[in-house]
Amino acid sequence: MPLAIQYFVDGVDIVDKVAMGHGKDQVFEMTDQHKEIPQKYTGPGLVDLQVNGYGGLDFNGDPTSWTPEVWRAQRDRMMQRGVVAALPTFITDAPEALANKVRAYKALLAEDPDLADFFPALHIEGPFISPEDGPRGAHPLAHCRTPEDAPDLMPQLLDLAEGRIALVTLAPELPGAVRLIESLCAAGVRVALGHTGANTEAIEAAVAAGASLSTHLGNGSHQVLPRHDNYIQTQLALDALHASFIADGHHLPPHALKNFLRAKTPARSILTTDAMAAADLGPGEYTLGAATVTVSESLRVSLAGHPGLAGSALTLDRGILFAYEHTDLDFDTAWALASTHPARFLGWDTPPPVTVRIQDGHFTRIA
Image (tube, rainbow, N blue to C red; front, side, top):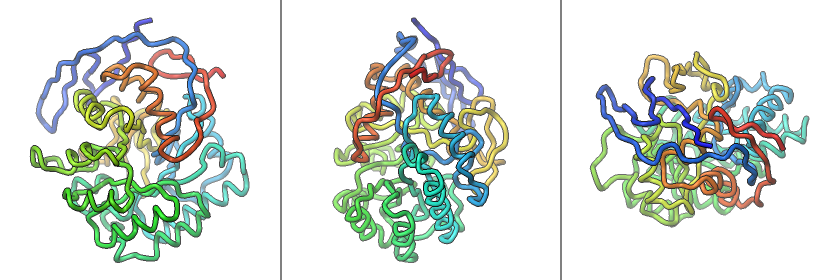
């Protein structure tokens, strides 16, 4: 049946057009709307590579408050949306704070081994990211570091995790980054480029060292870039890099998402959420680590008093529907970008199948 899903940017319905811009009204007429959406669908379970929190739980908050019961509750909420696996994502923080979170995560799995089936490994995003405004995003400047300044941090986290770090996002222009990429890849960890202001030479050196993904490409970047020679264009052009995209209408306007998917090709593309604690809840104030973030009525997430984005309140099912409605993707391919593609990127088997009912802009798992 035809299903018109409402998505909003700063309170403006973008089913037919989207008003976006930094203080300016830039209206982009949309096409390819009102595609046929199945009422029920069966496919490989969904996999989210980047989840900072969900359903009120902040994975970057105080780990002493974590319990198996709390984590199981969020697992169950995500499973209702068709997700079968997710990488809890720890963002930039003090070294000991990151270590404590890894210890707490491992302790949870030891106490409740079933959690490992759904949260099998971690994504470490930072602290080795650009300290510049724009590329740094919502990450705390005080804890940004270079691999050269903190050479023992990642080996410590790897030892604590005992094989349960699947993905590390870093900025390749930082001193010591190439050596770190090489060592992570040798340890079986996938390396992504993100929150970076790197030039083409640094990006190509990172790819040669083994980097294989661009994290939420098009975001965590400067507001103004050279038209042609910039790190977004370079990463789009490098076939050795997969790319993840946040399809919520806030992180990328629909036309940009459409262009990026065409450039990177669906085969090298992955849908993710970059979700924080507001995901599957709604507007209000939440935490992202030590920061307070505000979620608007349109589910735009920003630091309190700051216009920049600070993660998303997206659920992966809505990301699939948004990408399907606003790009060239057919429904099977949009689903694959959030299921088999991330699983294959991590070297996992095809996820087990799920069946969902699709209604009111959401999936509800029924098998």
